[in-house]
Length: 108
Image (cartoon, rainbow, N blue to C red):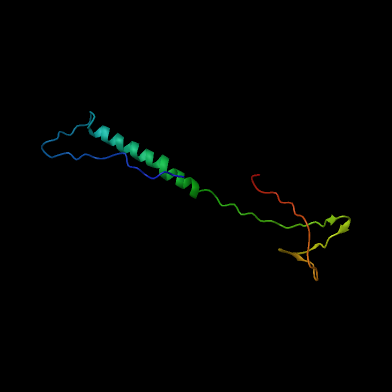
């Protein structure tokens, strides 16, 4: 699960004619812009990219081509399936049908 976004950067306003704006120092422009960079990097790594990774995953569609085989129980052959294109059903006038089908699933 992707954790909720929690902003880390908070801008403290400068006051005209009172604060001296400078590039260096703990409260300088460089420091503040690096804090913004860190905020955006964290947002990308922890929020945006995981969502894009999930959205970018291609959907897998599984198509099964039924091939059912007859089998017997106690030596007596059981009623088989009636197969056609894109369908499998009990044989005409059969009260039940039995069979097995092997399926190879993608990615194990």
